[in-house]
Every structure is written in C-alpha cells, then in structure tokens.
Image (cartoon, rainbow, N blue to C red):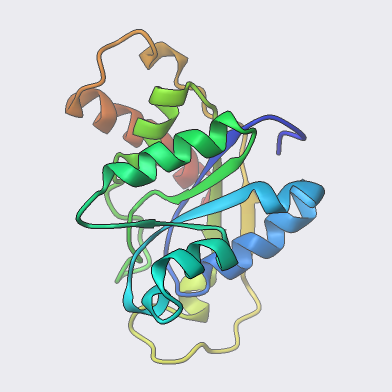
Length: 182
C-alpha cells in the first residue's frame, strides 16, 4: 500500500462482510490515514435507517443515489484531490455464485478522470463466511485479504473516455483482482 498520496482501491464483492474484513486489513496497512478512507456503496435501506447524510458522515461512505449517479464521481474526485483514498467494489453488487461478476466502470471512470492509481484487493473466503444466499454468517477460518501491486492506466490517459475505453480499463482492473484470487 502506498504510504501517502491519493489512490483508489478496487476490490471484488462476495459477501455482506466484505467491508468489515477489508477495513480491518486496511487499518493495519494505512494506519493514520483511515479517516481519509471512503467507501462507495449503493443507497440501500440499511443506510437510510440513519438517513443518507448521517450514514455518509458516520461511516465515511459515498452513497450512490440512483437519481444522481454522477454525484458520487464528483465527490470521489474531491476526496482524491484532498489526498484521500476511495474504495470501490468493482462489481457493484455481491455475487450470487462466489465468482467475480462483470466489472462496472466506476473505478475506471474515477481513475481516468483523476489520473490516480488503482490498488487491487482480492477478498477470498468471505463468500463462505456470509454470502447472499445465507441469512446469517457462519464460522469460517479461511478469510484472506490480498493487496496487489498498483494498476496504472496511463496508456488510457490521453484517449477520449468512451464506454469502450471504460470497459477495457475495467477489464484490466478486474484482471488485477482475479490474479490475487488464484
């Protein structure tokens, strides 16, 4: 993990518990910078319990509002410009099968707009711990968090940001994550 500077952490998403395990692993790696760590999440009912704004403040969460999806990119850009760290679950939702889904383009879009590096993270074992098909978690000792070398998207920087470009960059990011899961 870079000791300083802004970057994006792109991670796979298999479990309700992914943010917890990732947070524990990152606290050990980034120590004093944890207050500058923000996670992008869908604005589901659980966050609405506290109200959207309160959830964002209490948990350092950037909530995706379906009515204004671009807001989260703008907020992510501000965080990165202020030397922060943004976590994005690249698939956008938890998997039903335990296998990585097709990546969404948000991480690539944010990285290309800000020219920030991406740090891939692979969560292994969280699906067995607590997946979408289970009501409650179950004891599982095999949870691992793998942090990989940075993914640089420099070869895309001087190109026009199109859907095709975003899909290619997103596939590069997903490949970096998949390599950590082998």
